[in-house]
Image (cartoon, rainbow, N blue to C red; front, top):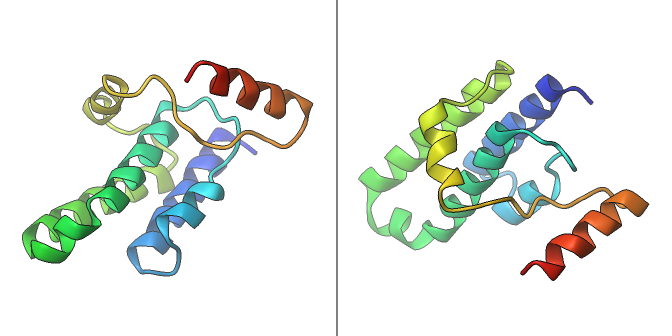
Length: 120
């Protein structure tokens, strides 16, 4: 798959999460494997935060609206095949060196997973 189609795929997954058709965990499992794209990495982290903030969203409708709008903006950008704004990418990069997006289930993917787990 091309980078553009990978971004479009992630945009679709985000939208399914927002409308309640997929839970975050299932969406993450369907992320494109072994894609070296900071925009997709940032979308991954945004979804993880979305799930982690579920209790806050229930208590604070304004926070829920802001977080939903943020994910919608990410989905819109990725759907156009564009790179996310640099401030979003930089914000996630300062906290995370890499994502936990699953690797392919071939020999190379298994080795990548193995080496990543050794570095924990």
